Length: 182
Ligand SMILES: [Zn+2]
Image 1 (cartoon, rainbow, N blue to C red):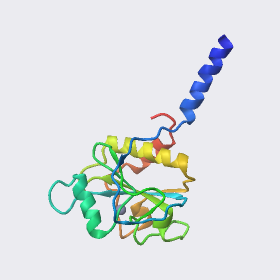
Image 2 (cartoon, rainbow, N blue to C red):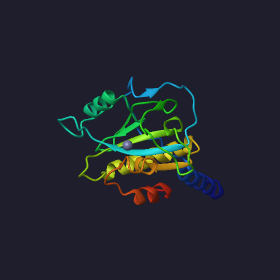
Image 3 (cartoon, protein in one colour):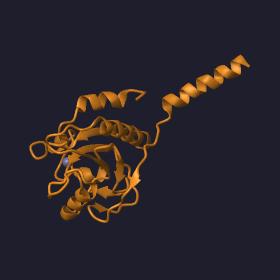
Image 4 (spheres, helix red, strand yellow):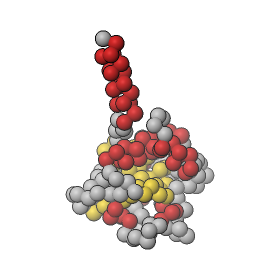
């Protein structure tokens, strides 16, 4: 009996360590800013930040999505100030979020191989802890689904042209990504 309970306990620990919890995602698909591919294997994750600069509430999700529509751009995911995740484009499709960009290895055309995640913030506020928490959960989940080789900021792949994500503790985020428990 004790041996059975020990095995049960150990398998529970095992599952706890290796199971990656799928985050809650609000489906909010858009009809613009992407190209339908249907199948692909992304190996890069690009983190951005965005706010509504067209007047009104800077953090209003419909207004931010309207802004994307105006420029025919979109990321796959958008994380609001409270840490809620919206999916705008399916992973299997190419979203227009990176623009002219390149990886440290010299490769270009990053939209085709990457998943884009937008964090909602203006230029003054910091990324909230709720946002960092769900971003970490989402990236860990994507790492469990795909072989992710690169996790980069927009400013890493388009230096001199892009500065986002703004006011984000990038090093802290990368450390949190490696930790087993959150
Ligand atoms: Zn960006």
